[in-house]
Length: 199
Image 1 (tube, rainbow, N blue to C red):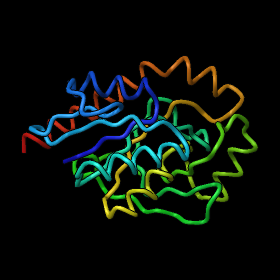
Image 2 (cartoon, rainbow, N blue to C red; image 1 turned 135 degrees about the vertical axis):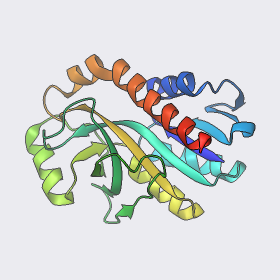
Image 3 (cartoon, rainbow, N blue to C red; image 1 turned 90 degrees about the vertical axis):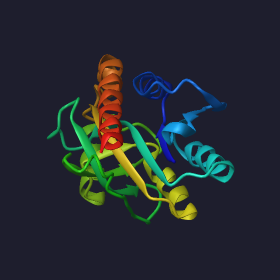
């Protein structure tokens, strides 16, 4: 069974609609065993790890996919661009986690990502993170999720859509782009899952 994790309510709702997952298994978790698919809203930061860990202890899954938004640290990628994440670093910890290749997402360009505890809202900080961690994207949940998946021996893939350029306009751009981007991401995920099921 595949578990898709989304941090924010808007991401989760867009995925729920696109995937037509209406059956509630428990709070925050919807899915259909007949389709081998479930969707979990994790929240961000350390709380995401706790919620995912509790879910994995209660339910058997074979693969985890994180789908969500990310800021761009280098300004070379524009909002709306989709990426597969190759590895994730943490600004708070030294360990780096390589991520699995999702079988139906390998056509996407690859970026490395660093997870942080607070939103990145200035270009100096963005450049520092990009250089130190050799990463093009930033979020607040992927590294904690990766640690939990490693503890449970599960492969984790991640598909991210750029929401902002990690600068002074981050909050404005995120709010402006959010609904459209989450719908686009959810539509892409649903189409690829359907494509995989048809094979």
